[in-house]
Image 1: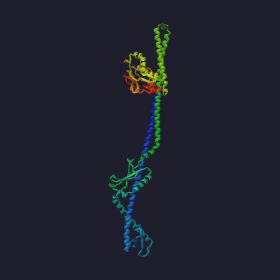
Image 2: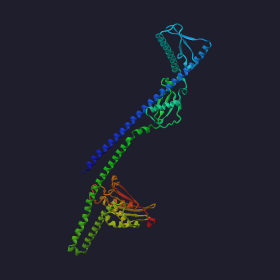
Image 3: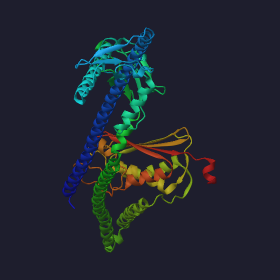
Image 4: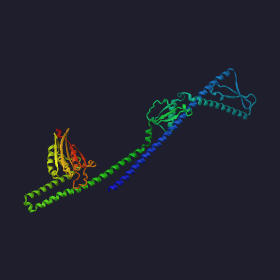
Length: 514
């Protein structure tokens, strides 16, 4: 599949997942907003009901107190009238006289205790009916006047009374609880009562400030003057959880969509990685073919020269051709070893045959072997093997290959306009042996520096086309150093050179016992 096709599919699928996720989140936000508005409306209705209940209770209290006072007054007046043997009458519309008798119970006071007595003659049923209607009208007008007087007293004097006398806080709590339940709200609530000046008059016994940022306020007495209007304030600590629970059924779908999106992104990443790996492997095969072809061709040509009688008669020529065959055979063996090293990357850990090794001697041997190759390009190698404790417990063959690979890279990526200079150093830091290999080659770009230890990765060399390899050298170096519990890092500046720094643990007595 082409890279462009993968990108198109990835963008379409990714955009689809993102749009789906956006719609789900928008739906959840809209639902939460709607539930919040419904909750606010229900609370407002409940608080309005509480306000009405408190006002009704106050009206009932005023009527009860006023009627009780009136009853006492009339009872006192009735007792005095009975002592003076006086009777009270009113004249009906038909001229008859109506006697008002006081009963023993104040609750049966005028006008409920009215008895009709005639002073003359019998009356017809229609006349009696008219008399009764007039009596009821008289009672109605009396009670109406009484109620109007109570209402006027409430309007002018109720708001002047202390709030503690006007409100029964126990009943207020019950009204509030019942009002909320009637509107479908069964959450824990806290409330307090404030006067017109914002001073707290009362708060519930279990009052808590948690969740008090979102407060619902309602005037207790709507008809009070604004300057004397008290307020009931209520808040719900569990409101956020209540709103969240109402939309929580959508959370699993959002999580599932996110998981699918992450899985899709990871799949696309794996596809690109595999595609890149395939391209690297193809490049590896091409390079491997070239690397094998060159020494094989050279060996074949040298073998043909040995068949020439003139070569066999000249010892110098024979030695030269034999040397070429020997060198190319070593080169071919080295390339085959590199290919075999590839199998190590499929295992978790390479098989290491560790022993005590003097790192200074090991590096000195590699440098001596490499001298001729460096001098061939007009270069030189500088060594500073200053490690006081150079003994390490390692696989000698693999560590030798590590140093050789790093020096070989310095030769491959040399700057053709500058004489090659290699500097190899060793020193100790705490219980570590430090090895550095520095060159003055073409250097590595910063974006490539992070990837040089990846398998099959090869740094682009611009116009330098004679650099061959498999892209396994530095990956092999990284793995060997890591398996020896060491670290390696690279420092480089473009066109100034590269420096590799290796850190390995020095040998301890416990290493030998293990």
